[in-house]
Amino acid sequence: MLIDSFYVPRHKKMFMLRHWLNAISFLMLFLTALPLYADTFLFLYNIFGAKTLQYLHRFFAVIFIATPFIGLLSAREGYCTLFKQAFSFGTNDIVFLLKFPLTFFGIEPSMPKQSFYNGGEKINILLQAFLWLVLVVSGLIMWLGNGVIDNSIRAWMIPIHSIAVGLGFAAALAHIYLAVVQNPDSLRGMTAGSIHANYAVHHHGAWVDELIAKGKVTKKEIDAARKV
Image (cartoon, rainbow, N blue to C red; front, side, top):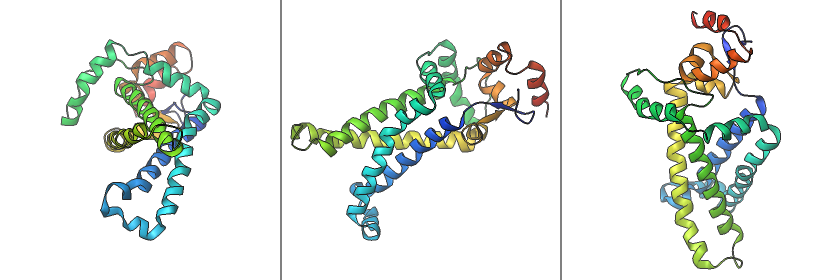
């Protein structure tokens, strides 16, 4: 059944909460570490104090590390869908990735029907999972490895951690642009938990077909919502 006759249910509240916990903790980790990378941001030390930023960095690091585990406990269905989809990369996803760049130039190519997560989202999921692992392992070694792990190994963690942060920040900017500017309907999916039927069919057609086949929505409802 559609929500308010126009919107297809997509994400549950706890899954959305997990998403925003991850986003906010990453942002705060990035901001609290900025003075370490550029003198331009040393004013943050003057305002908050170096120790305060250090403690805040560790506080949000704990949240960043804990978020996936919170998700597994409180939003298991969403996580199962996420990982199952991310590791089921097929021909349609490859075609999507090859054609998607054309949309940046105002061209709307015909796309193969996409599942719950489209090809681009699957790549993002896998990238974010990899970067999370690199950031957590390298961060914990730097934080807790003194006297336990060889200093030569700990020294390597600094550039590895920094590169992962840079890649994560670049990916976050791209993700924000796509969600806010190019596909604002997708942002609704992570705020209201539902997306417009027209957007669902256009970007996740195979998933909509599954919903219809399972009787969760009807083709009549979808067609009526798309006409408005």
